[in-house]
Length: 239
Image (cartoon, rainbow, N blue to C red; front, side, top):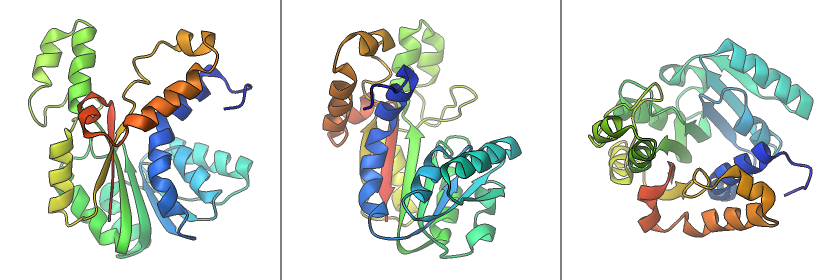
């Protein structure tokens, strides 16, 4: 990573590298119609548009979409912005209108995850890909216990229990069952942020090469099932 990157940028790159690694083969297949649900200020959408894809972001926040527009103009790309939520996505591109759907950090806050996945299935073309990024429950339980919030940690053990305003968390088995029931196949799951949230930022700043080494460590365990319960997030890619 460039030496001019700020510590927050280096940490962000570590947290997202596994997701981009998984998406790269899909994005390399050629120009795609990409739908980013809850894409907000366009952190993912603009980067994908820079690779030559046609990207539409659906988000309920007009402020976030305004920031997306500014980011896209600064980077010299076009990204369509639509105010709405997951339930309105069939009206945006129509049935079978997308080759790739990104649903990152959204499934946690919808009323009915199963219905949400069924909606996304109608938007995807045959052979299209779904990229899901969700919060993982076991890591959230551990984080609350380590912070001394023992009652909250115990409550979080129950399946489907909301922990806070961020919404529900999922285990790997729960997420895989939901996606399979919605008719998706070829499911690949990746552990995201296994170590990145535990390592003090001061260590990354003080130790030469620590950022690169941590990034490679995250990549090394991303596909190892024994590390899924330790990950802050789960990334699932399915067809």
